[in-house]
Length: 333
Image (tube, rainbow, N blue to C red; front, side, top):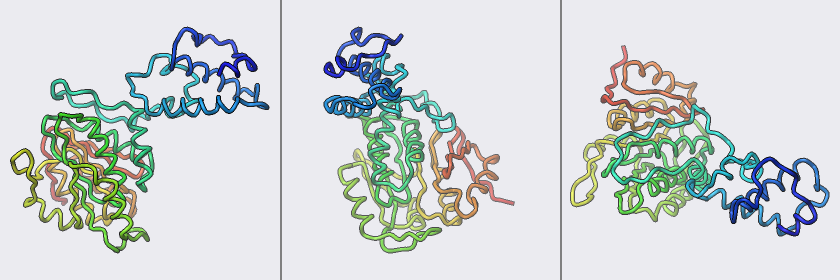
């Protein structure tokens, strides 16, 4: 870095001098000034030395994984942050912001992960998922905003495929419930096998099942049911697991993510069965509601005024936030 400064003097800036900060902050400011100069065209012919380029790549990696409380004001507010790591300077649109975390949080419970950490976890799990990044980020925001308690209800995903979104939920729950807190169970439902995919020319095979097992095998709080949603919902009242010496029935869920069959009849049956089981301020996220000419989206919008829920659309997703009163689906006229 010093060799480059001797050959390419740093442009005079009104921002704080690098010498006023030590270590990581000093390196950040130096690289910021360097990036500005390169973008302005000065020194573009020669470019930075190879050692400087390596340092810049290393700096970008550190910014990607650094915890929010370790980021000083100079790095959070510096206008050249986008030159080193564009994700930091990209605000989350209002429509993707989750509701505030419930007030009833267990004593001494640590705060949830920051936006930067969420984006990093989404980036890691995106490699195992066919869902686009912005939709996985919406799922991540809902997981973090779900109500917390000493013994939280399970999370449920119908339609697991290669396990990318389930992996994201499990990783985030590890952050939200660090030891010795009890992590909620994550249930996944998918029959796998060579079967057609409703509404698309996709077909499952053993590769997806093997990828799911490899991705989720290390999580003791994960339970997979190898069946379709129709069979799972029919047996849901009889299913339970043993936990802490007692039976845990699946009568309540913190969050439900529906990404299995996209047939409107099947999806609506899933919503009718699972919506009453969502806890207050919990979430039910339905993926691909724009399929089949938006049939599910229209039915949800028509039923929303009769239900204590908040309906919000985010691209192809529809997010239902449960209010305080238990929802009851009123039969359609």
